[in-house]
Image 1 (tube, rainbow, N blue to C red):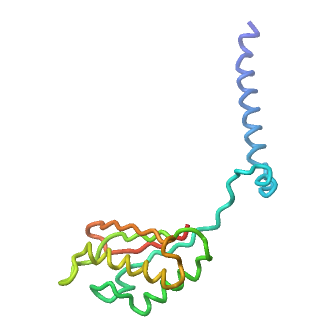
Image 2: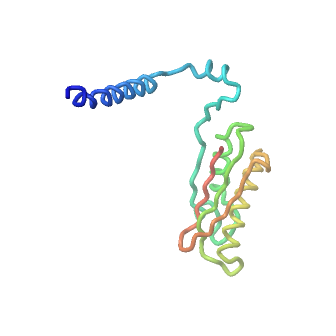
Image 3: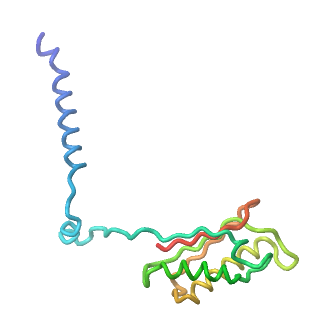
Length: 149
C-alpha cells in the first residue's frame, strides 16, 4: 500500500530535475567566439537594424515625385548610417497620396518610391542592393520604410 502512495514523488522528482536542468542551461553563457570557431556553420550575430520611417508628403513636392531639399537630406542621412557592403536595403512604399491631374495615386506612389531608390544610389549605395516593394493601401497616406538588412 505504501508503494502506491509514493508514485507521485517520482514524477515530482523528475519535474524538479528537468527544471534544474533548464535553469542551468538558461544561466550558461558560452563564449560565442569559441563556439563559432568550433562550429563552422554557426550563425554569426547580426548588427542591429538601421531603419527609417518617412512620410512621403514631407519628402516631396506636393503631388510630384521630386524630392525637396529636406527630402534629399533625409535620404542622405539614412545612407550615411548604412555601413559599406552591409547587405541589402529594403525600401517599402505603403499607402498612396491623392491622385493629381498628371498621375493617379498608384503612379505617384511608384514614382516616389523609385525617386527614393535613385537618391540612395546617388549616395553611393549599389543599385543591386536596393530592394523595392510597393503596397498601395487604400485610404492611407504614403509612407516610405527604409531598412538596412
